[in-house]
Image (spheres, helix red, strand yellow):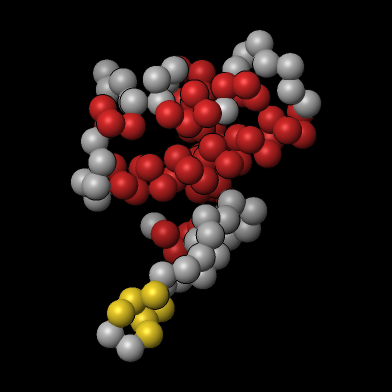
Amino acid sequence: MKHYILKKPAIKVGTQPKRYGVVKLTQDNRRLRTALVEMAWRLALHQPDYWLTKKWAHVLSPGAKAHRRNRKKAIVAYARALFVDLWKWKTGRVTAERLGWQMV
């Protein structure tokens, strides 16, 4: 999954794996990028306890007075962090409750 939107894959230097790269949503897999951005918008509207929703509320909330360009930049940043949180949740490193997700 990470190879779809990470800028550079993990490489090994000696015996220690060196991981580098940035979650990049501007190239690579267009369908995954679109799905992540749509998921980010839904979470921003319907998950008020999620830490990313609280962080970006001043830009992404329905009543926010933010410029369209700033909203686009914020939702992409939200989607990048969401992808990391999904990976952490899927691998068992964090629980949904700790992230602030309301599972129905």
